Length: 222
Ligand SMILES: [Zn+2]
Image: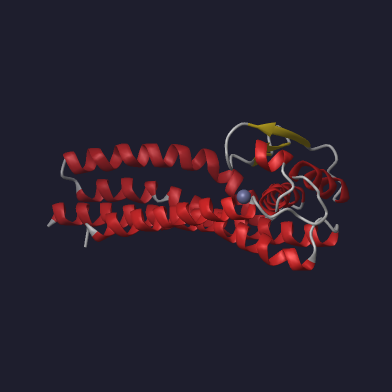
């Protein structure tokens, strides 16, 4: 059982990595008919939503794209920024989806942002309490530590609707602004779906890890 809780998440993580990498490679080759680059798509979406004050910058790496609400900046990786592929406009629009979520105070992203500092403290403190509890053979103490560590799980759980919603907003904006055609929409969907799967795999892996720790603590108690 415990071995399965290690092996299955690893397989799941590897599959999701393979899925996103192969989808990215594929949709990086498909040029959009409008010829718009990721940066242009992002600019158009932000402008159309009254968010012209948000900066769009180019960053290093592959799929390192993100929106930072503290600096109000959408960072796009080289290929996404300059490319005019399905992958480029899809990822750029997805990040703009997060910007719109912040503007509209979309509940899961508000909760997610509020959770960041709590999760950092709770997971570190929880781990220390759990280890101390195990070493001192105090079952309840170890369990309290583990419950605190589950804050990470809650964080990953609220990340899921945030990601799917950002992708839905991205697709709507891309079609509405004529950056992609209706025919190109299914490819954009596939690309964004593959990206979302990595978050689902991470959540599943964390869940399996918590379950495994619980079984170990429980076994020591008996
Ligand atoms: Zn996202």
